[in-house]
Image (cartoon, rainbow, N blue to C red; front, side, top):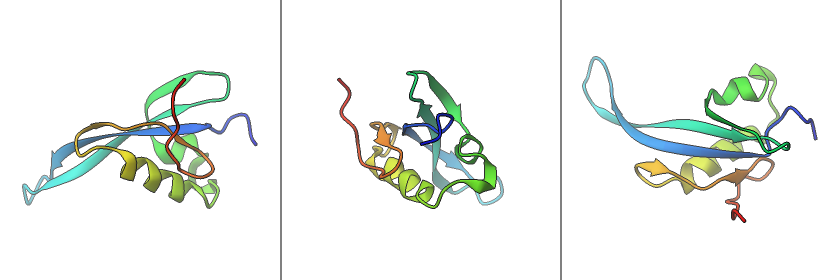
Length: 89
């Protein structure tokens, strides 16, 4: 695996409003954890995965992080290749 790719992602959900229609919609921020133990908070998901060249399983991980996230708040870490929730030691 590429050492620059993260090994885990985490999503944080909050409610936002559209500018014109004033409707509520669910928004997400993402955090990334790398193999050396460093964590980046509020990363842009596509930028961390090298722009438009990210692997096909990136969509699965993003959906896994969003589905494991509560309605509002921070969800658990999910592993990068499969999108399954991790248990922190």
